[in-house]
Image (tube, rainbow, N blue to C red; front, side):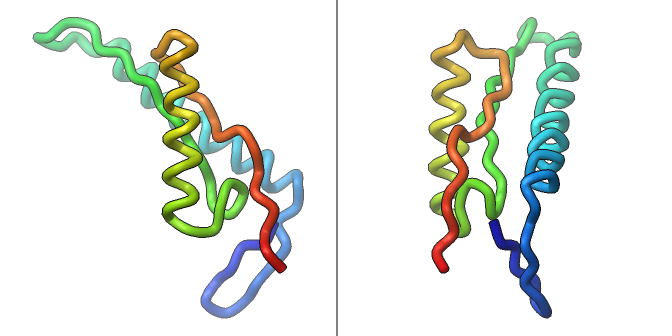
Length: 94
């Protein structure tokens, strides 16, 4: 996987990618849990989230949105009120 910056390109290791996945999923899960504990006039609200990450799941906005959308539908089909990460890493073009 490659990440590009304004001044450099660097290889993202598998370890870095997994660490990023855990942090991203952790943030989404904290948001979901916080919302579940809120007392709202409408009652309890649940949240289903699909998440994707650059450049692991795509290197263009449309790809990232499509991957997150697919993960969201998996979360809903699994019963909702959960976080699901995009399933498959994309292979970067050389």
